Length: 423
Image (cartoon, rainbow, N blue to C red; front, side):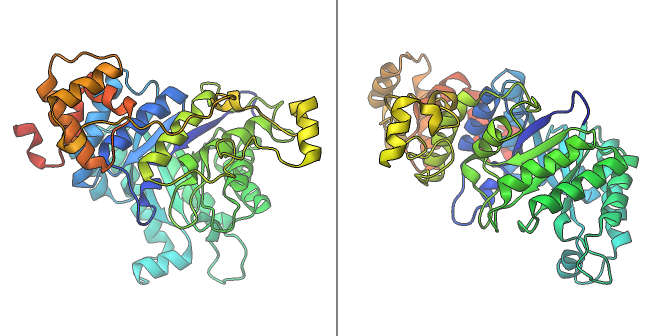
């Protein structure tokens, strides 16, 4: 392990989390999440899809907000297919400077998704052409995703991992200018020992930082993310773990952000290593998890790590007795470390507002209740009405403050029409 190698957290809620079936986030909610991630010191947010037209205004408005300091030091990145045309489209229509380019490496996906039209050599060619395009367009950070890396097998199909191909894939990406390789356990297929071995071997052979993107289909997402990252760290390179708030994501979800951070900070043998990005402020976890829960309209499970209502609840007589004597008997961490007031876990705290159909007097009352007097009431009312309509739920106090602080950017975020620049 290199002395200074670290594990950095990349939140993908605004890209993978919003792909959870039957639910989603509005553009304003995605923006608020980026702001919260910045407050928490998270390294990067994969904020969306720059090749999609309805994301363009949201992406550029967030980049404008970042310049104004609304996102802290958060890096804003986009996801695109590893296709040169998608890269050119993303660069033409947004100001993003950080991209992850994705293509499948497993034979089952290569055959199944491309109808047998592409060989492994074709995959390498498409990927390197996309990296070349990104480099040509001035993209500052190029990540390459090996989708379904954990099921990448040799042609003979003897169930061995074909790390030789993944090494070729990673080396080709690096040779063309990629900065990181994302090892995707797309179906949650890996085990901790296999993902550690694979990641370490690739990282040792190519000496390129590794991202871990793990799904939870078999319940391994957090464990695999940690052990995959340790494979990279032990190979002497930095590691980046993809997470989502509250573990949201397709099918059974992604690696949960709070669980991953706590595991790195608190699990056996990890406390002494000091390998987590030091900018992370875990005391912001409770706030961000509550917000995302409300935005998605899904309650936090009572047994959710760190932020569930039972995370610090003790009923067993033996446990209660031990807790009263010393909380360390039955708790690895305390509520205040997560940002929870130990004596009063407040409800989500929605603000009653006039919302989509409200008027000036109601708006004025609500803003005065949160300590703000507005000079541009008509403009803010219009934005509050639109934002409430987009969210399809009452606005939170932080959302109302955000609208008042950044009205021009919020208007752009709420506008999906191509005609924005012509208004």
